[in-house]
Length: 255
Image (tube, rainbow, N blue to C red; front, top):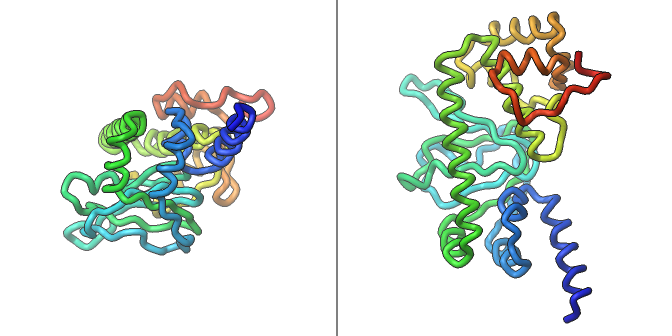
């Protein structure tokens, strides 16, 4: 096989991976074509989930981790009083289900917030494959480490910040995650409802609505339905206590 043919094949594969939610798992570690093929062979691409469909239930036996390809998933548990407590939101290219590794059960449930496509990755087969591909194992460790850091930041968010800071932090966090996928960090769509946001942040829904209205009145954001634009990046960064990983202000939109 010629070098030219190999290059064309690699470019074609790379193009396919760049459009896949698993690019965060594959491309940064420059897997060889044969290794990407081996990873692809264990992935099961399921039919789309409709809004409200459950991916897995709290207490189910842990068997797989999942990558969101399109759409949004929320995770939640049911408290002793029977109430739903949202624990996270997962956007395209993000992995969920990792929390099931420890005790071999999923400690939370996962439900689609909108039409969502996912890739199922059987963990036993992934573990076996990663033993033979050290770079894949290293990337898995990085993903797990990032999840731990995100959980720690969430504890600070819920424990020490006021309502304005909590809402700003969530919007900025989502913006950073959109940016990692190559999209704008200052203009994006919120797939979750005000009620789901309030549940996640530990605030009353009326409080979240008042904060969003106040942000609009102050010129920090504009909102049309679920479409959000951050129009004063500096002030939002101050509220969220974040200073990196966001788009630089555009003179036409950021004041």
